[in-house]
Length: 276
Ligand SMILES: Nc1ncnc2c1ncn2[C@@H]1O[C@H](COP(=O)(O)OP(=O)(O)OP(=O)(O)O)[C@@H](O)[C@H]1O
Ligand SMILES: [Mg+2]
Image (cartoon, rainbow, N blue to C red; front, side, top):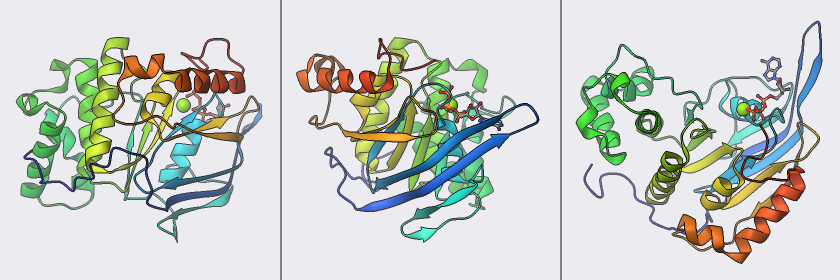
């Protein structure tokens, strides 16, 4: 896409836009004949406009459940979700969700995968194609627009997933371990890409990861689940200047101290992979 066609935020620093998404006292228990699991135990979280916030916690602590409840794919037992101060019920169309599994439809071209969310929102065909092309340009995949997904590498497919989510111009972008299945090199390249998209577009992002270094590199704040599943127990600020460079962040004493604090909180000896 051409420069300036999308609302560019270009702030590069942390968000200051006031509360946008509020999760209040969210509880969720799953039970069947065999077991009862408290997946979320009175979770409170406020995400500010334009903020990049990560959720970090051990496997099974409730991260995906919290994202699914946030967008409305799952219903909480109790608690409230608000977007711009308005209580939500059902699936929220102002949010987009990037799944860990790369779930492109194999029978559709890359472009037609990007238009999916726009079809569901009744956007006209011409406008769908125009926006999808813009988004593909944004993630550097213009030349693959008419290709079938199988011709793309895992990293490229995940970029299509990001383009698809951004195409609906969501108020909040939810990302559930989007790079978890990618090799280190591809993951680091995509971290840089997402960070730069976020900084240019000003999208508010709620991001789930196991990888403490990934969370530190990307986030304004990191919300930590404690050792006890289902409880958000601490929120830490990442007071590192932007733009960030991975190698510099890795060597920064403030990041090293933050990493130590987070891994101690999680109870993991090796913070690179926080849980699973
Ligand atoms: N639909 C469901 N039915 C029953 N139990 C569920 C369901 N969804 C999640 N759970 C349970 O709720 C708990 C939280 O699951 P969730 O998927 O939110 O964890 P997570 O933090 O995303 O884990 P991971 O890091 O492995 O993805 C787990 O014990 C899980 O087994
Ligand atoms: Mg999960």
